[in-house]
Image (tube, rainbow, N blue to C red; front, top):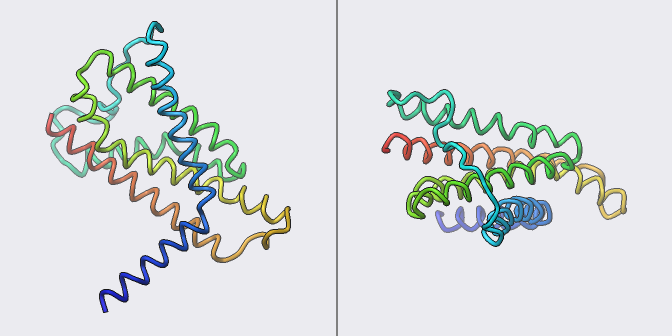
Length: 198
């Protein structure tokens, strides 16, 4: 019974990725190129004067005396959700504004990480960024994929390759949005635990 359930979930995931492959690929490219491209560019041109910026890990609204894990994580989650709200709303522009906004966010994150790496040890940078950063970048890619899905549907229907909108498209968009919230909360939880253990 468990093997059958596992097999059906695996098939569902495989079909979901197949249906959304183009939007997921484009979203991941936008996130990774804007983030890692910035770090690579700044590393190659290391003569550039990048001002050190304050650690973004000390989010506004989190007091040093706060020890409630849920309160800290929810504060970080709310902060990140509000920052990514324009990418979410970009769904009404068929994803065009979301791509621009996420590219800008990737650039700003890249500059932040590069700047921090110039003043702190690599182990500190990894401790503060990589563990929650992986989940956060996946969340950003998922919200971007959610926003550009209507654009893909529109283009494909204009080309005559499909019907304009189907029930499965709406289900896929709900799944992308749900996964975005789950990954963003997981990133917030990890970041909150790191903050509380400094």
